[in-house]
Length: 312
Image (tube, rainbow, N blue to C red):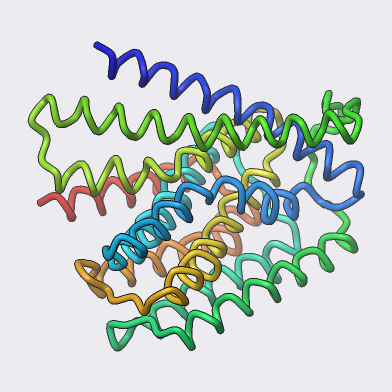
């Protein structure tokens, strides 16, 4: 009974935290006169990737470094196929010209780089340092292009976030992050306990709850952003989180100790890269710079198919 109560509390914290974070982030974008996408790709993406970062680093220090790669691969798949698919199902997600020219290309290159680096089965310290340096370069590039980018999507400009002072804006962002991170932790732990009480195997729990559990902040923040008319914020969150997962999280973990693939197979890596390719194809070809609801269903079906493959 206690686990069910904690599950409700966790979901409530996530929902409220996502709303606060979205309002605060949208306010920052307006105050700094940069695109919501860039805020989503930097501030929101790093903040919502905290669960992946803490879980991966903790597993590295505890001697289970192999879990870091599995956590990142699973989260990146969940981000693109499930989160972006669900967001586009609610409301079609529109891409800017800069998304097509730079951001999606970066996501593809970073995903391909990880596949190449893990070709030998190990991520070394030298490769980890390269990943961290690349992350710094990506952030600098994103900020530079964001300041000069003219948004070409029709977003809702009448947000209450415009009324926030700087103090209130920072306050909402900090509270939002706290609600997302701690709410996700409570939800993940209680959901895992409930699943075990029903006799669900550890393997199924790891594939579903753990992979999606650390991505709950991204899910909540992205859905909240879409519902409030900030589609660029949701897109930036997903792409930024995927880039941060590989460059920042794996870079940090492999700097501590070299990582091996463990139970992760080449098929898992190819599927992660394939998800990034699907996103690029959807943006450039099918939806004419829009992920339509039909494409969203394809994204969700692909994720469900992958989970079924893993289980059976």
